[in-house]
Image (cartoon, rainbow, N blue to C red; front, side, top):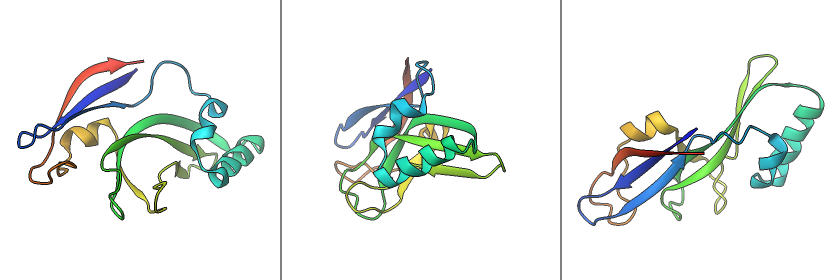
Length: 134
């Protein structure tokens, strides 16, 4: 079950809900592959076909692009793969606009994050756990 986290700014009254983590719908690589760029899809499909995936986690994270900052804060589905050798890889963590690496925050990291308000930039956001989602 995923967690709903609400970000708010006391200065400008910005308020946004983010659905982080994963629901109970099950983890199916094929179900979410369309969310990745073609090159990453091909790598993951090859890893699956060659039975190199030991552990697969798919879930939403709060992200922002430190390079272009065009889209502010948003939730994005990220794929975390641990291969048979124990190496961890993260897919889906590139900005669609500029290709830069996204700064990524899972639920625990989000609740402690000090991120400036994407609307006014004058104050850090306050994050609160406000619900669950599936």
